[in-house]
Length: 192
Image (tube, rainbow, N blue to C red; front, side, top):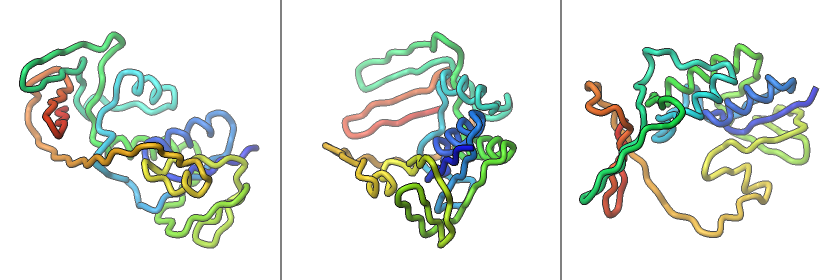
């Protein structure tokens, strides 16, 4: 049985772990954080993402999140909106999505090593806090500033733009069936 080590236990890393486990491999997820992992991104799923989640065996319950039928873009001069051609999207708290993915991964027997503070990898060997993890494949799912990608020499960024994200949650009734994207001269605001 092939062993796959996924460095990064966010939504992408857990989705990879679930998929490789479904294909007959054994998966180990390593992350320096403790679940559920929260950050200011990943709080909206497009219809195709929902279909992929269903193939992975992850269903978003109807009472979790807000279903939206498309996207509305606006700036100071114009507004344009479009419905998705293939179903609805879901605005979902990243914490809720992470919990759903983690529950599915655990159900399938994925090994998760959380709070890993010292991760090193060379060849087919991954060391986590002094413990050796055998790995036929290594997946770098540790985000935009991936240390794994950098250590492996795969970071060849030609041009980098710095972006900052902030988020705020309010419990109010939706005023629109769309995920809204408001454009400004130096910013974007997403409302779901």
